[in-house]
Image (cartoon, rainbow, N blue to C red; front, side, top):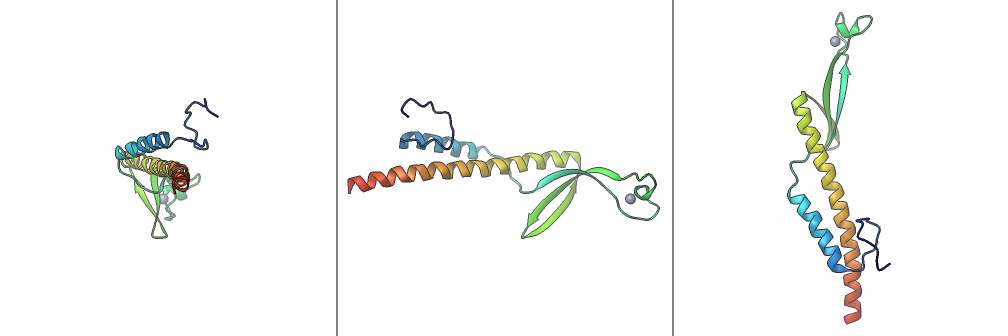
Length: 127
Ligand SMILES: [Zn+2]
């Protein structure tokens, strides 16, 4: 287990606090460049308003759209919002940023956990 290349796999138990610190710092640096974030997800969908005589009620039905629809959960309530193409492109980026933020934090947490074990072990041997 000595000559294992640093492949960046999370499960590998590094035995080196310096190496863990380097990986941790690299992740923290990635966060400092992160743009705005947003929860939720985007869907591209057609709608049927249900008004009698509308084209969406015709036979065959011709639905409205397609629209971009943003769905978010705010304080336990699901909120939907209609967006145009430009707005949807921005939200797609912010949603991707949030996903990256979560993944990065999870990785930092895993590295911290490994480091904590090594640091505690050192403390036990010195006291
Ligand atoms: Zn309609």
